[in-house]
Figure 1 (cartoon, one colour):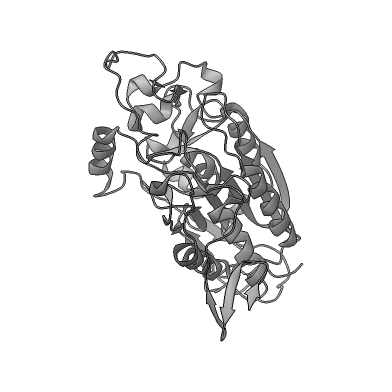
Figure 2 (tube, rainbow, N blue to C red; figure 1 turned 90 degrees about the vertical axis):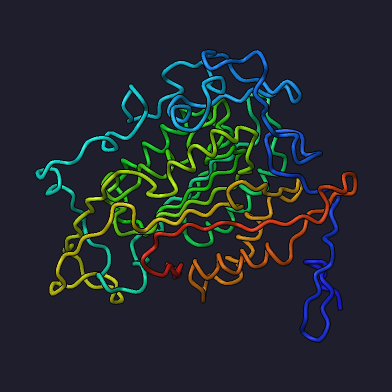
Length: 399
């Protein structure tokens, strides 16, 4: 028997995955030519030295690879930095000197510790997040399909954006798709979201659909920047109305390493032992004067409790750090399309983390690249990578 929707042969309740029939081949979701695995690498030009401030141009691909100064300081050599105005290189709301978080370098005073408190949306021992607020929340889709820097157009990304809109509207989200924004506009939108009042919302969801480089650099229309600038403004100390609530980030990018291996190894050696020097002072969760709804709100007998500022995040990458992810120019990316398939089928009975496990398993076992031109790109695999700081299960209960 043939499952006409999926193109699978079904026999004795066992599904045998057949090669997907497509009109066009899958492509590596990368910044340049996908005909070979090394075509997206960036070799240090012989004429470039450490004192140069010129944009780096990959002469083979004729691709300009600009990055923001705050990323260059830690992750990239100077010759890979775009010459740009301060306005489009320093994220909104960050110090103008290095573009770093204000609290990244100095300890908080005792007085400031006392100010870090937020309303408690759920009891300390609750197994599920409170998804019974008035609104589900916002789902923002940053869809980068075309670029001013000469990078390859991400054909099929608009199909991902449409699919996300359908699936997440069905979950009750207020979905907004933002196409081909420059870095400044992305940071303005993030700053706006961080400063909004989310008290009546269950959670926040953000999708990044774009090209990427190693060390979690992602591309806006005009420049590359560190992806942490997307989620950092929503830690509990910076966005208190989302404290104790899930913050979901889905990042569909190609995280391939380039040939700046010495820099990659340097950063790896510096970070793998401790991963930083900052201290997390936490945020005190205090009771709200609201009625108990389905045992998810806190009653008057529950003491306040303290949460780490980075709790309640889920960051899902389309692939493992250092590996390509795959996109079909007419159908969209494997990760986004599979994720939406799984959510559509299971959201009424299954929590989000379980659905992500199903999605990862399906991509790992059922998906293989198809390329009828270049055999090197045929029958290749992919597995998403999930980083979770969630403390509870997420069920998208109907409003």
